[in-house]
Amino acid sequence: MDDERLRSLFASLATLTQHGPIPVQAYSMLANRHSPESLAEHMRIRWLADCRFGPIAANIVLHIHKMDLGDVALSSCVLALLLNDYRNRLQVRNDSRLMFRNSVRTLFSMYPIFVKLDQCVSQSFIKPMFCSLDMLIDDDPDSDDLEVAAGILMEEFGPSLHDLNSYLVDRLIVKVRHRMISDDVVMNRDIRQILLHVCDLWAFGWSELNVPECLAIMPTSGSLTDGRHLAPPPRKNDVTHQEFGSKESII
Image (tube, rainbow, N blue to C red; front, side, top):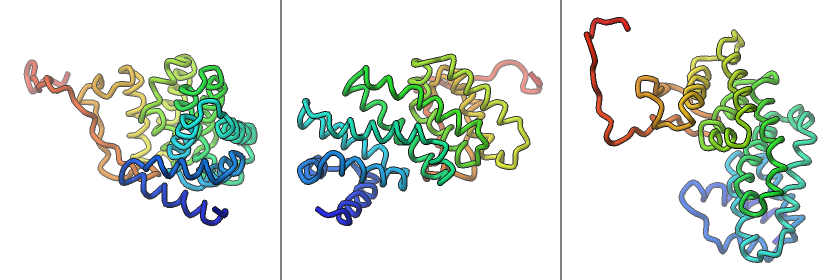
């Protein structure tokens, strides 16, 4: 399979994943026809260009590792590329903010996979994840940077980051709060709502179910940069509305 066909395949996988799981045969074909170095490099090109590809790349790494438990060639190549992009993060961001954001997304997508592969190796992700989030929030961010950082915290990694280092998460939340009250031009209504919800999740243990319904926010306009819309949080089945005291009370 030549480079052009491989790029076309990756583009197809990114589209197919929106419609359901990708057959494992597709991953096996990649492993059989390409060297780990070539496959990792082509995956990097794709995940930098396409925000949807990070989870696909993570699944490829996991599947190929399961095919041969002794084979760590691909995972090692992917780790080297991710850490190299992190070391050169300033240059990557100067060249393209989009590529930097996609690199951060992929870093977070890969972390749970490497936890499964090797607990010790996965420790090398911790500092890059926190530093990258800090850059997105506090280093001259634009609205897309803030949406990606908030999305990472809201989607599924808030609790994991808290378990890894609650102090660093608290520092990030302080910076989020400072950003919320700033008068930066990037701080429009939608961004403030998203960041406010991040603070609510932090305050209530990173669980949507713990956030009081009166604080649940449902933006009426706008969406995250990767096309995801903020859905209303799920509620506990046995929770019913109750009214207390006079309706005229201002408390």
